[in-house]
Amino acid sequence: MTMAEVLAQPESIPHAVPAGVRPVTLLPRPRARTGLVAWLTTVDHKKIGLMYGLFAVCFFLLGGVEALLIRTQLIVPNSHFVGAHFYSELFTMHGTTMIFLAVMPLNAAFFNLLVPLQIGARDVAFPRLNAFSLWVFLAGAVILNVGWFLQAGAPAAGWFGYAPLTSKTFTPDVSADLWTIGLEVLGLSSIVAALNFIVTIINLRAPGMTMMRLPVFSWMALITSFLLVMAMPSIAIALLEVIFDRHFGTNFFEVSGGGQPILWQHLFWVFGHPEVYILILPAFGYVSEILPTFARKPLFGYPVMVFSGALIGFIGFGVWSHHMFTTGMGTVANSAFALATMAIAVPTGVKIFNWVGTLWGGHLRMRTPMLFALGFLWLFMMGGFSGIMHSAAPADSQQHNSYFVVAHFHYVLIGGATFGLLAAVHYWFPKFFGRKIDERWGKVSFWIIFLGFNATFFPMHFLGLDGMPRRTWTYDADMGWSTGNLIATLGAYLLGAGLVVYLAAAVWSAFRGEPAGDDPWDGRTLEWSIPSPPPEYNFAVIPTVRARDAWWHEKHDRARGAPAAAEAGGIHLPDHSWCPLIAAAGLLLGGLSFAHDRLGLSLAGLGVVVLSIYLWALEGPGGTHVHPEAPAAPAPAKT
Image 1 (cartoon, helix red, strand yellow):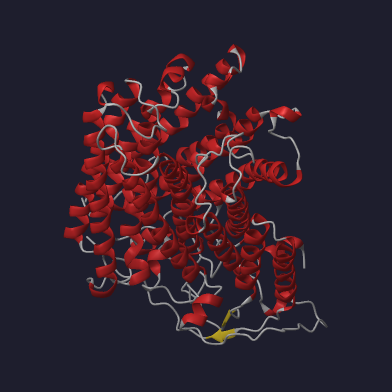
Image 2 (cartoon, one colour):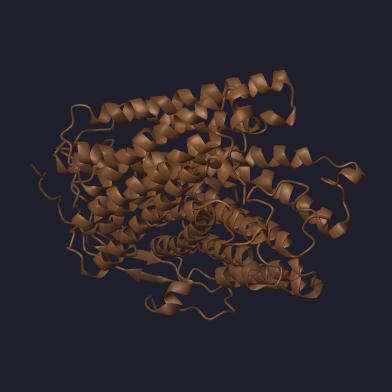
């Protein structure tokens, strides 16, 4: 068997074990596929995706509470609602939580839920590695937030952790150690998951699913995975250097020992700006699936959309220093990064043009997912326009570290990434829960969120231009910032109320919503061709793809004369496994112990990781076989 053939096969299938090798399993295999144990030990990509989503929503709510506390402190001048240090902790953890614990895992949830279904696969390439990435994410999230319950408190150095604020001199307690180690663990989760999806998309596509027939969302998942693999090592190295400075007396960022704090900025932003596209490219994919469905016409300019996404990812690695125009890099460096920043607007503008082209002449159905997708278009363009302003170094020098920048990146990351995610949740909710979210309450939540968002962040443009710093704890009434902050805080409460309405409607609909059927939106891609919720094996028969928008063509009889589907045969489902969860628990123990200078316990945690991975490697093919019925013929096309 060649390496390509090995990579193309899911884990734990019988013919992947060499002849004559007798597998050994020292941990009991959980046989039940329902109940708590089944969820803790699952390797099913759909259950893993739902758990990613559940954890991410919880952290999204936590980050939202942190944001409301920040805005409450700033609602009036000279406020003492929270203290200055606690405000810095809130500021740090709000940014860290929203980026690493909310938006990234929500995107990971949709990668897990959708990619295998869209490419016609039964699971990801490495199911147990997929479970490992989930539990490692949760371990990293716990390490990041455990400081709230300790005397040291949460870190207060900003979500960007600029040196020397993370040094022992400025942060002598354990909070900075928890932050650095937590991010290292989260980075491991992201890299493992990204490699898994790269292999899955390249090797497990259904017959006929060429790369240029791949749904746009799966393309964006592939590009995002490559960005993660290439960008995460930069911040991993930077965080490791912080750990060495704090624990082993090195001088990477210590000026007194010849270190350079600006080195942190370069390493951080080499990760930090591709991270923006790691967050936003999946939203491009959601919108590129939703707009054609509700415009009832194919996506305009599919090849250009794909190549522009790849170009955005490529150029994104060459613009990091536009975050550093005020650090004295010199005119040559400033000019180069200004030009690169302008250049990256071109493929982004191409995408917006193609989305408008998709809408033009379509028969639009204004359902809730469409409203959120259109809201994404408008708000992301607003954020993009202010981003182009920052490509001019003189303008950036005035706006740098002001509330104008806060307005800019929230228009991109909430107006863009979060509105895209809200559209995606509403659109794919029926596929995984079998019920629609109530349409009336969905639209109510959209308008509350849309109005609250603009009331919150639009005034910040003017606050920033008027000189309000982005990390200010309080301000005097004579500064002239009172009205803008009052409107922004009231808008934040309205935005929070809208998100609560959205979440409440989703939870209610999961239990009492209208039954949706298998294809409630007259969808275009393969996930709509199977039952809702999908069976554990996804496809009774692996489909043969004969056109882009495969399910749309199948329904609308554009594949006349195609051979009938083969009868469903036995399908192998791999055993559940405790090993990924135990390995992640070892990382949790090791990380917390190292942060508190408990070397013995940290080595014990590392031992648990090594032992569980060893037992993981010994797990046999096991599993069960199911014999589903052959799929029914596609339903007639809707008119």
